[in-house]
Image 1 (cartoon, rainbow, N blue to C red):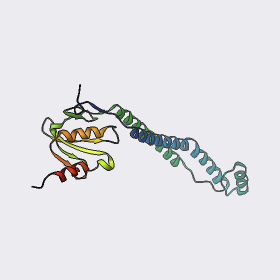
Image 2: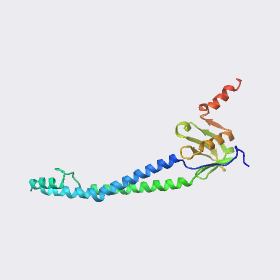
Image 3: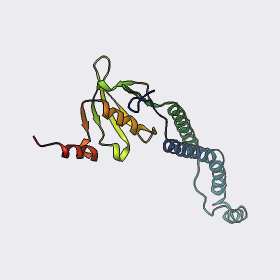
Length: 206
């Protein structure tokens, strides 16, 4: 049986991330539908009204006034042309692509996990980071943004970094605690840790 210090930790994406991604996808989808409706229906209808206005305002102003009252048209319709219609359709395509891109990213992220065991942790990207290879931990953004940056050396000795994201992966704080308990190196943000501060105060002066 694994001890608490070595038991596997598996962190899945949080409900916060799911809600956030859902809101963004919904917004882009709504804008896509809105732009499409304008470009396909609303703006062509406005163009037709504007063209009637242009053709009648000088030749038959009384006739236009009567038609506007009958059809509930504005007295002076908004100028509308094909360029404005194309722009709405282009925006529809752009926001539609953005919505699909965000959906694909969300589904991809949902399959990723942050894990840890007794000797290493594995980032959502699949990169395994042995605790013994970590030489610096930056927790300065942890309290406000839930982000801790881990600096380590890969098998080739190259310096690399990855992020532990507590907002995106539930239980990431447990992974961070295990990292802190199993590496020897620079811990940036240690002064902000009440437990660490108490430990330093308890140590006798040299």
